[in-house]
Image 1 (cartoon, helix red, strand yellow):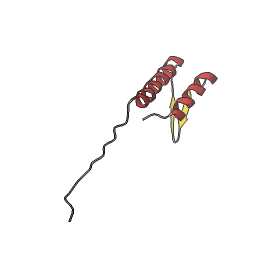
Image 2 (image 1 turned 180 degrees about the vertical axis):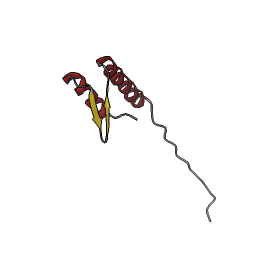
Image 3 (image 1 turned 135 degrees about the vertical axis):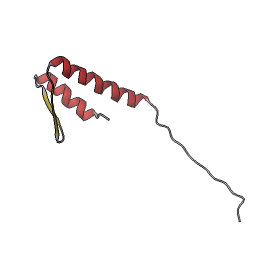
Length: 67
């Protein structure tokens, strides 16, 4: 699951010409600007899909006659 913070890091890398980005203890080096742009599109799509998908909430009720 991608985060908005990861998306921001990818976009900042694209804007500054960097091809290497780090997320926590992981570092990824993209081979080209096109590959970095594809990663950005992937992350944007997942975040968008997650925000548009309503969360399902279930409430279970039990009833009885009383004592």
